[in-house]
Length: 545
Ligand code: ATP
Ligand code: MG
Ligand code: MG
Image 1: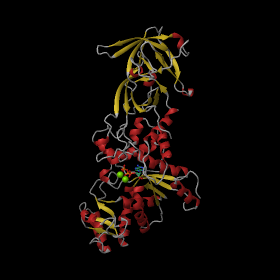
Image 2: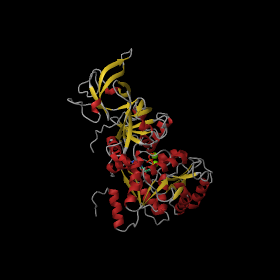
Image 3: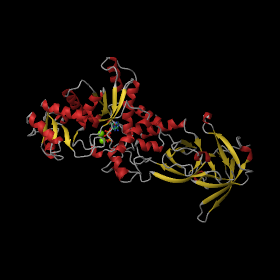
Image 4: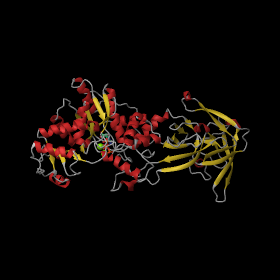
């Protein structure tokens, strides 16, 4: 019976529990440790861990480490860290497909003995050629009819290292004329003389993903094996292999559509190229759509989870507006990020009639439970260059010569004098305060503009990194070289001045800099003596969910 509001996968799970097919569900998240997790993986994590949590089930973390040449311990460590940061815990110990290599090998022997697998000595080129095409059936290998004994002996020789890479493979014996090319005797094992980060030099043959994955699911008692749509054609082989080996397990593969987001690259291989070519400063560069990059950028785990929930689960392909992600992040920050003032493009302002240095107090947030901070004010302050215009454009409500503006949380000031350097650039303003305007409207006139500011005596210099999208093209993969689609101005480094309360932040703390946007104290580079902030996002929200 269909339950309102459930996506098709959650409906299947609900039905399987209701019918008693399963008394508990077990899902798994199976990354290959060949790079850092990215936004696409977040979707899979939220789905796999989410369905387990919602149904009192379990979710395993399994490293799909069957391809040692591309894998590293560094990636394993980061995957664990990222999942915890996203707010999820896996069932028991972390699992490795490589820890099943003995069992997978024994099942391969079983397949050979049953006449369901054979060792093929064709070259990789011949194998490819003889696979046929969508319109043409494949051609049987000359090795296909070897006896069980011959196959056992050859497979043992593969294992013993007697074949070079590419000289022999173990293949399933299914049907070279199948309309599904994945059933045309797929390769189960290949020779790879590579050191493995978990198993060392124990093996020189490694199972293929299509062989290892279903059987790992079986070993772990996975009930619902959720994967992306490109594996739909692999499902018949998934079911074939489960039916052929000795196991009681009946895992079911269910495919859903990948998450694609505009302006965002979700391919580990391509992200790795950005790192390797020095286009970004590492996997955790705040412009990267990796979990590590988004965390360093200041995105919240809560916002990412909300985004995944809003994008839903289906079989329909599509591209999600990155505005939705930004909307979710802003939503998560609005009520949690304390506010403060920072001037990103400082212009000196001398207050000619401020009677004495002062300390103002103001709440950190409209939610007064978040406490107060001290805001010093003395006769020299900074405002943002963009908040002053000698020749104002139409509708300009900020400071102009002889005009008035309110300093946020402080006085109304009037600009009496504009000081320029030889080149004609404005370098200082001399302003007077209206002493009757602290916490009060001015008498007899309206002052519309409000600008932020920072005291020069106690304000603290800070580096502020303003990030824009990494790609200028909404489709980063457009054309034949994704590197051509990069935004040449994806970061601007500014020398700002921040109110002193901000220098007391801890690395990773997030704030709203009033009128400027959301910012985070950089996880790696922030110190009290040399504060560094990253812009998370500006405040403009054009997205309507
Ligand atoms: P990439 O192509 O970036 O290497 P992958 O799919 O090969 O990604 P894996 O480490 O094998 O990466 O993926 C682990 C899990 O995450 C898989 O179940 C995979 O289907 C899922 N996943 C990866 N990318 C996405 C995406 N864009 N949307 C949803 N799920 C994804
Ligand atoms: Mg993969
Ligand atoms: Mg991949």
